[in-house]
Image 1 (cartoon, one colour):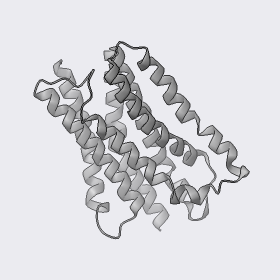
Image 2 (tube, helix red, strand yellow; image 1 turned 90 degrees about the vertical axis):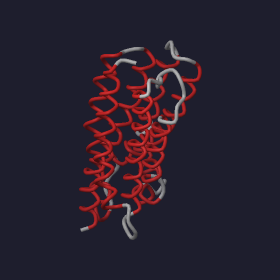
Image 3 (cartoon, one colour; image 1 turned 45 degrees about the vertical axis):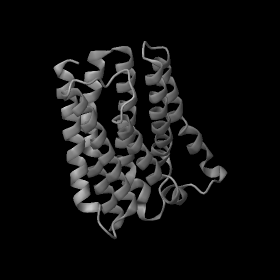
Length: 221
């Protein structure tokens, strides 16, 4: 593995770690909003996953073409993001009526996009194990993306909960797309494209928690 991979994963670890520790100091305490705590924990999963991958690279082990624990960091992150939006928050904006049917339909774009990107992995030179593992990652991101898109587009409710969190949902959605593009690029050996995508991930992962924090503070006023 080339040295640039180490520097790339170091940058992704540091950027996600900064976001996580900023949020952990504020929200991983008793009597803090559960929604915010789950987003911070999701950022923590990103940091742990990147740290594991970085350590594998430093010790001369591979991270491509195999399953490794670092991939579960991405799965865990989007499981937290999905859980935060699913349930109480979603029920505030969507009562299941026909009035909001168009927003539920449009939000399927996230799932469709994940399926399209995965096709490029399915027909790539990647190993069978890598394709199966990537499928699990994509399913988690797709499920989370459905609610991110929905909460970006759906009309606001009392107290401005949805409006305040739209910027966060846009950040989380962008990070999910970038993760899928990173995975697709790695599977196909698109090195330059992967580097670009990973650098963009650094910026977005750094923003997720601070942007969420601004939104939560606005709705809490």
